[in-house]
Image (cartoon, rainbow, N blue to C red; front, side):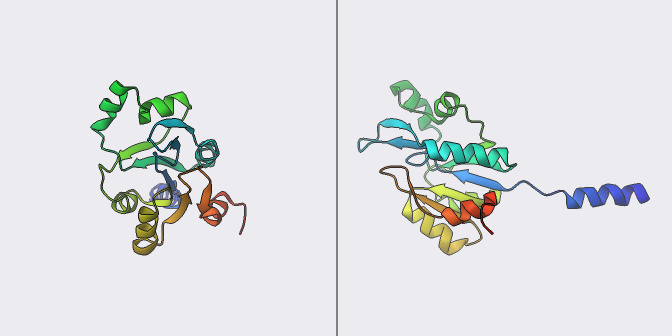
Length: 159
């Protein structure tokens, strides 16, 4: 019985890794006004890796239609698989919402922080699920527009 309680205590005390999610288009991957890939958002790739190195699970959650990835590949456009291979990323999961709002997926997976360029996605998360921190990305240059405080809190840089 004692062994059972000790094992149970270890199980209960074990913390579930927190989930951080990144949008793909105009967040991790930057595109021009014609939606042509121009390169990675290097500062977000650094954060992606930093969160993983700190023990967080890191997901890519995109509104893309999963069935279009093959079409993108055939046209020579940037696919998520090609992007992660090219930039040495190892996401814990890739989820396609197939044009659905991300809020439902974020809640379902238990995300604690989401990076996105879409102000409507950010507004929905902030309004409906304020327990999920948001970081808004400027789609024109990849800079963080808001939410740096969430990043700092999770990475322990501020109290």
